[in-house]
Image (cartoon, rainbow, N blue to C red):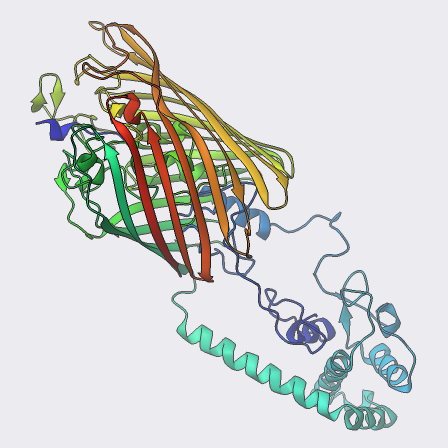
Length: 629
């Protein structure tokens, strides 16, 4: 019957040069090339945006179509859509003159990088000024203080050839002078090799573009994904428990990101995993260690990529088989004003909306434990369950470029019209989290994100939540279930949670990051007087590009959630426990095998696990391989 107790919700490059020198603009997402006008391909990087997360989030593309695929973090979120909106918003009149927008010029001499030293320049100058066939940048340069190369000159010549051909084709050939045709012929002969190379490259790019268009998944939707395969082993745990076997687990996520206007974002996420647990934790690593709650397997021994409720569909109270496909995310983000963006969905998480701040967040790429990735306040009420429990709606308001406010309201069982009358336990129904959008368990959460300098990020969190049963809903410790120790499971509780997270990048590749959190739990019943305070903190160093570009590492230490105070009928620890402050020590190193594959060995050590010195020091080792596409 305990199985019904649940935690809650949840060149330029030659094409660009041609565009700059001809009346037709090239594709805006192509980059400047080297002097040979080769296409410049961006180097992929696993590092998240240093300013903000998010879960989705980490990372928007500059392409005309929309969304960027972040190979580091397939969990896309509100932050992604906000960045998208900012990138697609036209610049003001005060924009920097280094803008990449093209503007027509009337003389080659306006292109300050071109040296007017030979006859070819003089000849092309005359053609340009007569037929208006070159466009340059507003700062009248070719992006750098260097002389025009022969290939660049050939691109300008090609533009004039096309312009004169247009004039002839439109019956305005009388405007083209014979001496200009003779000059063009001489220039063509002088630059035959460069013109031939240029045109062959254009043909190659056009062929590749046609192939991409013919084989693209959708004109409005992009697909990305992540596959995690990991070996996990552990020693220690409760006394007299035998060590658990090494297990091999996986998690697969596919995200469809769709935009209808170029500024909005619809996220549809599918996932499958083979973690076990169900209502009573059966088959989980935590249960084998003896460190799990009697139901739901909440524990401090969880890995970062493990769902909070493995093997259980919380909404329907039905089992989820290994590698069954689930809809874990459904969220729509859309701007309504220059500084205001709204979002709503029937499967969302707090981390979709709130930047993580800490660089240790990244279930497939960074820290290996659930403890390290996020401030516990973001996880309250199932806020980061990994199963998209909560129907949520909220906003993000950009107060300034360095300050924004985000808030949401989430309801766990919004799809249930009413609470079940059946009882699993006295005072606990078979739908213990209630039903309806505004009835039963729910949460109001907010985050103020502040960036006072380019190297400092600060996030302040508050959450007010209500549960119809005695839980926290974080999944971080075994005491998550029975938050008010010694109080009946059916006692409703109210939580006021406060947290702060700071990251300081005191060098380009090293960041100091930490968080603190306090959760105040009170019985929400006239017949029960009980209260408990949980506290948690963490501090660590994050190393970017350690030993090799793309390789990251982290080392951190902290205290998992721990009852620091209790009042009324609540106990400081469950009966039989020998109360002691728990600590968590973790280290990992993620090295990039390729742009799409990374391997992360790591381990974390739990001292006085679950705040009980009767438990042995526990070590959990992880070897995680992550594939992104």
